[in-house]
Image 1 (cartoon, helix red, strand yellow):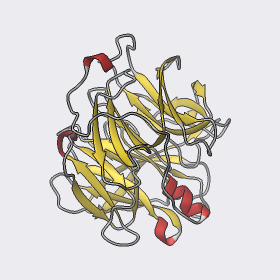
Image 2: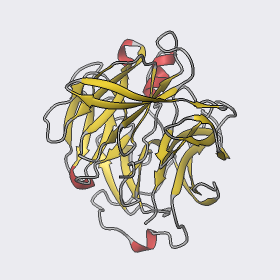
Image 3: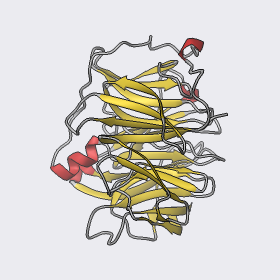
Image 4: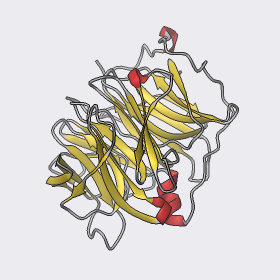
Length: 335
């Protein structure tokens, strides 16, 4: 099975935990679909974009509230289209090649999950969400449910929540309390959701890991058998959960890496370690597994995205492109 794409790996709350605070995002005024829109609009589909595509969210600087999403061919890195947005706080893809963008619409003072067809530049469906800061997302391949990490949605201070919209349709989501700030998530092929985050309210940016088992009523903590640092992206690579961590001492020394994890009974066993080199991953990398490769942000140059062998790691094989302030990436698989 192909992975479901990557939600943003370092949201404002983790960054704020490192800097000493946490605040909401602001966005540029933009149009909106009706909150009840679920039917796909054929006019919004792209007829020219073929094959697998990489979506890269980026801005000119960390201070720029406006976000562009460049759509690139893989592995060539040729830009085929671009989406212009206000503030974007998360992104993920589904098995049909659709991409979900979590966007704050300042003119409506609300967050929306907006669905884009493979290669399309206009939303074909939209869900208006409760007025909280949103983060990473994931789509369940077994049901089509859309799960969104909600750092501000928990039952008490220091808690967040996972909000799940059945069938990725508007309505009231199922809400699962998380005893820390959830950031990034991915479903495996059986519909189990794995997620990471940190105790940001306690100014502790160290990685915490958990699971929402399919049909369960509550999340469960997972204790890993290897050291971790900052929470990075989470992926399902077709065999194992892939969890990126690094960039924060003294919890983890050496290069940032991707752990391949097998989880059972509240324990996470690291069955493999992937360490991209020359150039290394960023400390909290945005990454997506792509067959026998991994696409991710790198330390070498500001905004550079490279391709490395996966799970072998080692030197990179291809430079996809360079951008400004990268805010996320996800792969949309062609059919």
